[in-house]
Length: 274
Ligand SMILES: [Zn+2]
Image (cartoon, rainbow, N blue to C red; front, side, top):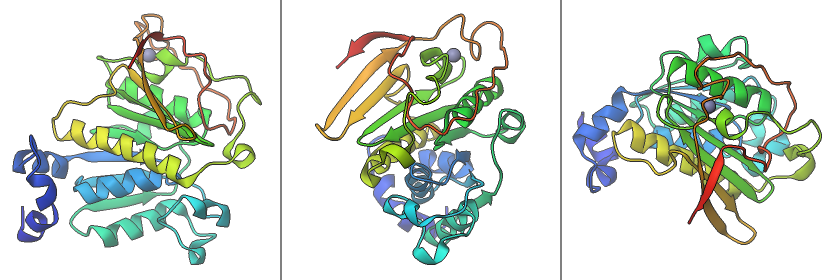
C-alpha cells in the first residue's frame, strides 16, 4: 500500500477486524456492478471509496433528467450521455488509486453467463426482472457471489447469495410476478434516499465479504419500509428443485418486463427472523 492509500483508508484500517490484510483483499478484488442507476450509483460509489481494486460497471442506458432525484453521479449537463461511461469517469476522479471501467452494454440472458465470468463478486443494481434473473443464473452457474438489491416507492429489499452455500434469488422467487402486477418506478415513483439505503446495504455486504468478514444477509431477505421505518429480515431457504442452483441447472430466460421490486409471494420463505 502506498502512503496515499494508507491515508485514504485510515478510518477503515483502524476498524475492529479490519486491517491491512483486509484492505489488500479489497484491492485484489474484481467486482461487476450491473446497472449504473438508482442502486448502481450508491453501490459503485461505496465500492470505489472502500478501495475495491477493479470495478466494472455495466449499463446501456443514457442519462435522463428524471434520473437526477437519485442518481447522484450525474449532473444536468450529462443528460443524453451514457451512464456507464459517466459513472466510471466520476468515480475515477473520486478514487484514482483503483481501476474503473464503464461497459456500455445491455446484459441479457444470452450474454450474462459470458459477461459476468471471472469476478470475485457481482452487485446487482438492475431495475427489471429479465436482467435480474439473468444475473442470478449467471452468478450461480459461474459461482460468483451476488449481492442483490431492489427498491420501489418507499420500499427496498436486499439479500446476499453465495453460490453452493445459500439460497439464490430464484429459490426465493422462482417466477417473476405476472406482467402488470408490479408497477415500474416510472409509474409508481421512487425516493432517492431509499435506493441510497439499499445500495449502501449491498455495498456493505460486498465489502465485508470481499475483505473476508462475516456477512448478515446469507439466507436472509431484508425488507425495508421507509414510510414506517421498518426493517425486517425474513429467513429464506435453498430449494433442491431450484432451476438455477438446484441439482440440475435449467436455463430459464424471463421476459423483459420493466419492473423493479420482486413479488410478495416468496416461496422459499420459511420463517420470520427479527
Ligand atoms: Zn436457487
